[in-house]
Amino acid sequence: MKIGDKVTCKTVTKNRNGFIVNNDPNITINKSYKIVKISKNMGSPDLKMLTIMGEKGLCNYWSDYFYTKQEERKLKLNKLSNVNKE
Image: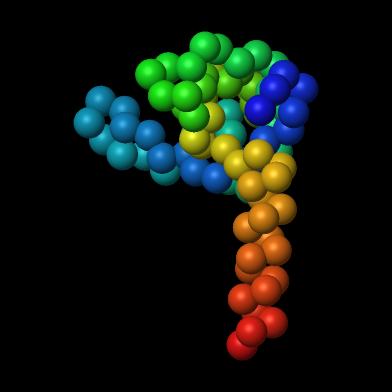
């Protein structure tokens, strides 16, 4: 992932004050967002804090909330190949 890339939201599950919520006013599942800033790795080389342009402006989310375009393509191809096997 790099600044300017588009990522697609895969989840919005959050723990807010001990309650699990499945919606967020800034992001929508399956919608693409542009990366504006990437913060340093946070303990894991695969986990980064992304600043994206969300529905209501700039917001921050962990990178595991999103698919990269490459991951999304791979999932779509796998889905198509599984449909063709049936």
